Image (cartoon, rainbow, N blue to C red; front, top):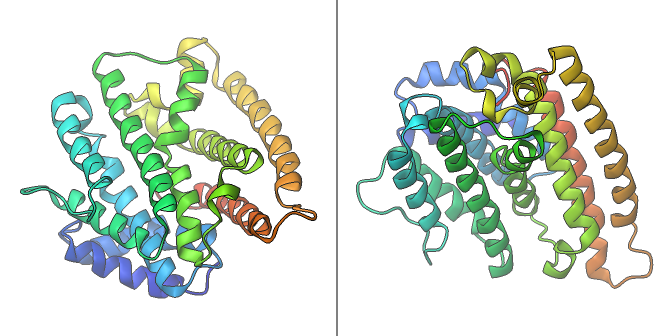
Length: 303
């Protein structure tokens, strides 16, 4: 756990209020504590600088309240409105200076601030990689809206593929370099072992999250965006059988994660830039372990 969590919580409280993400600051402060938002940042980034953890905590606050919950209501069944909102956010990522267009809601202005601070001090290559993963996250949100409006339920493979994006784990992975103050060489970042490790880690996070949040999402009728519920709906499995299936999927991925971890973290006699992979691998393990612990202790009921 990062030693900067208490400071980060205070920063996120003030930041959310300043950007109009919380009308009632006291209520929002209770939510930040009950949901352990800054603790999630501290678990994922235990080695972050104080300023870096402020940024990470702000991102978590924005993501869980209010952005992710926006699509639980009317917006989540309105493809036109969702397309306008998500399209404006996508456009911000490609602007030389990441600022929102005119008359955008607070959630968009806060997003622009997060991305602006995220790219500070980072290379153009890192910005391109981060923007790519953000676009995948935003496009995944829109795909969920479209399927919800059409009453479509994907198969398990398609659901997991999309959940990798919509849990935002790849975005969280990128931010690791920014908040720790150690950018990975671009050549190393795209090495196959490290790329596969990110993907498998994101799948582990998505599956664990869907186990924890299945009852919450079933209660609101959102069965298309949870792997456990998709297995129940599409394949007709009971809850025990669905959990048994995902437990097997998790075992396979944990084993593969550890195999890749050993390869990616051992540069041998390779050039010094490759040694940065060791730090990146340790950070990915922190994110997988940190989100698992948070999923099982937060008062939110996961994502």
